Amino acid sequence: MGAPWIDHPSWELVKDANEATGRDIGDLLLNADAEDLSVTRNTQLVTFTMSMVILDAIERLGVSPAICAGHSLGEYGALVASGAISFEAGAKLVSERSEAMQSAAQEYHGAMAALLGISDADAEAACQEAGDSVWVANYNAPGQVVIAGLSDAVAVASEIARSKGAKKVMNIPVKGAFHTPYMNSARQRLRKALSDTRFYDLEVPVVANVDAMPHQRASEWPLLLATQLTSPVKWTQSLAKLAEMGTKTLVEVGTGGVLTGLAKRTVADLDAISVATPDDLDKLVLLISSQSSLSPPVEPHQGEHLYISERMVVAPQAGIFEPSSALTESFQSATEHAILASISVGQTIGTISGFEVRSPFGGELMGMIAMSGERVTIGQPIAWLRIIRES
Image 1 (cartoon, rainbow, N blue to C red):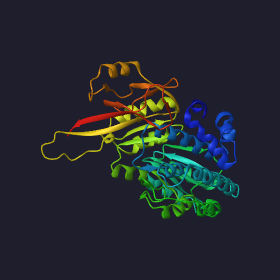
Image 2 (image 1 turned 45 degrees about the vertical axis):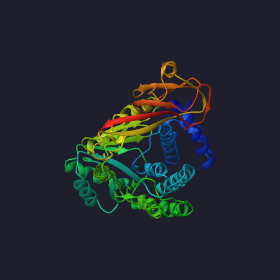
Image 3 (image 1 turned 90 degrees about the horizontal axis):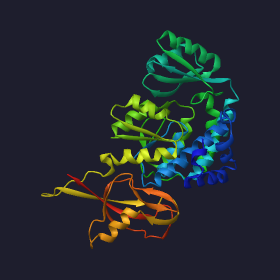
Image 4 (image 1 turned 135 degrees about the vertical axis):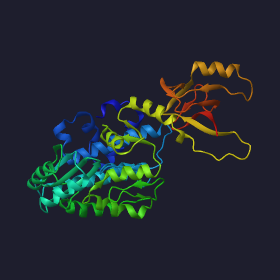
């Protein structure tokens, strides 16, 4: 899964993850087979690291989240994205979490199964009728619930679910009853790591798995993350909360597109996109730029008919900047204080050591901040755009 990103500047985070965890995550991302990746201690580390590489690539475009949520392991990535924990702290916590969960899974003969075409209430009833060794582990979307527990109990609950109308039962290839009381030993081990981790008040809220509510205080998250291990993931409810809070555009960060599909099934009129490869960054730019949320509404003063929003195009990598030839020509012909050019979404502003820099925004080019031949660093502003919208 790492191969498409190896030449991207954000790949440097893999080295940081290696140093934080003492594991060769880069080798897993590039060379591990399916069997190796199915081992919990490997699965979680590569998934987290890959998600953070892609998050970093998105942030290099100048795009940042207004609110976050993460499904199970993804909650750690959401906390990094929101500023609650550092990337290194997140990697260390995920490493400890994965080891703890693998150890807990070896204590019991656990299993998980996805029930499709069944209501939440019927799935809960199927587990209750099967005894006290199986529970709902994930509320993923309307009509999709995951159950977990001891293998025999999961099998019984699956049959009961079929009798209650489940259209399909799919066994999940894991060897553990995750998000159930059988993870209690992992919870105790994780609490120690959480107590040693510094949390910060969040820059944007994260909707938690445990209660599907937004949380923004640092003090809340150690308990939420520990409780998550033995509680069901309330993802359906979390998506509903995101929609209630005004979310219109949801970006799934990481390999695969499962959560994008779940979101589209759960929330009507939601733009959802998965960013899994560098090519997907272009799609994201086009989508974000088309949303009115790009420039927040401004209440005009009496008599005003326009409001202006300024945007900076930043360098996605370090190197020597050269403006595009078309813009160079417009510079030469422009008079003082004139608009240099009209820029469309995705238009090439220039190159950095041969790498094309395209604008995530449409607007009027008011000035170049980086000059021809200048060496720029990652995130350095290179162009100034003005976006004018009618009120």
